[in-house]
Length: 368
Ligand SMILES: *Cc1c(COP(=O)(O)O)cnc(C)c1O
Image (tube, rainbow, N blue to C red; front, side):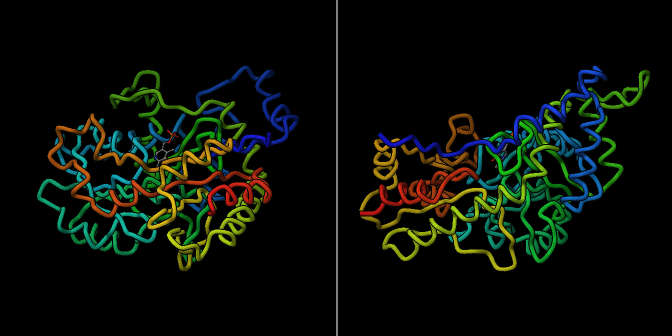
């Protein structure tokens, strides 16, 4: 029996390298609260992402919640967002007391369809929260123009887009802020972790205070904060992983190229076209089965029988979640393109350690 192929597998540095990185923590006994590892990772990420302010968090979800919350929009305000995303995006908006308004996505790259945003804007709209799905960049220029016209904030869920560049600009440079996730399954991980990237230094200071209970100094608590700090061990994992990132992305790229070679031009199989001007991080390999010899669910089951795990990602859409049943803006009928994709898409196994033989096994299992 051939070995199982999981859908993802975390990138990790050599064991000794991580041990070396955390050794100093046994001397300092400083395990969290903006220690040396945290400070070093923040600096390195500001350089790598070419972004003046990076605020580190214990996970990406809290990073998103905290930055949305920090804008202090009136409760009940509306936020235009996409249902073709992970639960986190919609939950973050809702947990801040705001109403998600779902915009449909584009057929080719699955990101929010900027041409459909304006019709969703009302006098209650305060922000747009688009998602760089699978590392595909959103229509950043169009979204910026709409935001400017209607005076809206743009907060990108860039959880998938670490290490993506557009016309030489880092994915961290768009909108008022971008959230990255450094979860174990992402291209770059700190075990759990995340960051908000922004150009506004004053807002970065606010975020840094709010992630530590709103405590600015021992006797000064200006905000109702929470606890969302990244620990030293997480930061150490990040520093170690960052040294190997370009190699990990190159290995992902080789796997993706093999997938494309094998699956391009097959009737009923649709792949994401390469985006013009975008340097990819090869985060995911989504395939849409539309008019193929088997349905998406049949392909999923067939792969599972052969010990290969794929993921129905993103299915279901967040606007069909039970918890949003009462929302008048919910319901997949309002986002037909997203609904069509969610029923047909599968992300195939992809990680740096995936061999070309593994890719061939996955493709052999899919192809008739
Ligand atoms: C992973 C992910 C998140 C949440 O990040 P965590 O670090 O797991 O909290 C948010 N949005 C999207 C699109 C994601 O894929």
